[in-house]
Amino acid sequence: MRIIVLFLFFLLFNSCSLNTPEFLGELNKVTVVKYTPHVKQHRAYFTRSELQIIKDGKKYLYLYHAKKNDLGILLHRNDQYILYNLSNPKQPALAMTENKKTTVTHVLKSFNSKGYHTIASLQSIGYISSISLKRYKGVKTLLVETQEYSSLQDLYKSAIRTYNADKIKNIKTTLPKQLIVDYYKHYEKRATTQDQLEQLQIIAQKLQINSKGIASQPQKEESIQDAPTENEPIENESFILSYFQKPYSYYLGKASLDELRTYIAQSATKSTLSNRQYTLLKQREASLKEEELFNQGSLEELIAAYKINKDPKYKKHIMTLMKDNQ
Image (tube, rainbow, N blue to C red; front, side, top):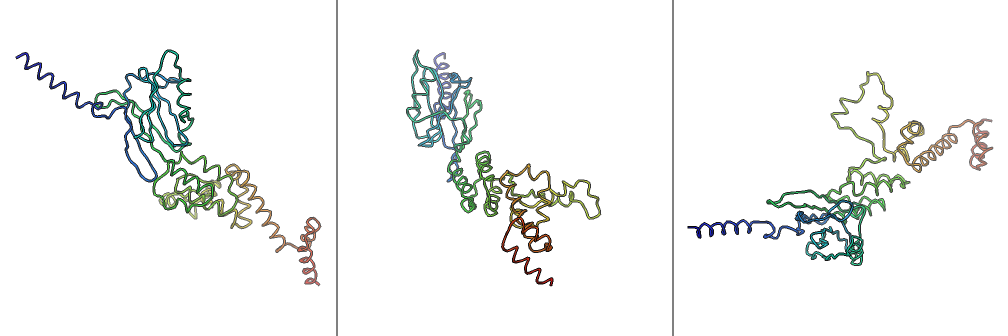
């Protein structure tokens, strides 16, 4: 009877061990979650009971191989430093056995020689990563999940840099805006023409980024409810101006002189635009003023202007007006 009980216990123990994730090869291994033309998702469960602190109180460290575009995670388990490839699961993990003289600096130099370096921001290379503590099938693990958008990020960077929205208009995959917003804002400040701003507007709409060149459009239900009626007194002029605000590109290329003056006079205009964008508006305002003076100014105003600018077309126009007045 005792032998039978021991035999049954042995079978029970082995059946449990066969169901452990380590036996199934699910632990300490990077697996593919999803691959698409623009996104790669990976996941890994690392046992954490033996993990030791590597640096700054953390038990992991990201290393990046720029030439291969490979992201790795460095773990210190028992007497080994192990680098797992989070971009290419088929790539075997790189291990380095420590001794009494081994330091983190020595370990990092060793991996540096293999092309892997520490990286300050994963977003700069198109990666989003999350790390959490999970108990997976009874085992304490460190769950690491990564999403790689580097190819999609490069496409958007090219579209933004060249002010050409055609490069991304047919892409349906959403690029998380935290991966591109700083890059977008940089080139938004450098935009000088109406066409460039219009292209950036298209890109911003796909990224759901608030652009200086895009007017904030309320929902239809809100517009009916919140917009002032014809008989309602206007108590907040700034609200009305912002409610009906047109895009920056409109004021740069199409607005009348009165519209442009009103827009420039708003206190929020200068604070929300870059110095370059504001300067371009002031230059257009001066150009429209000169055009208005030339076409509608009195003879005295034209003569006064000619004394300053010495423009031959003013002289010709003045002579024509003087003949007409005779």
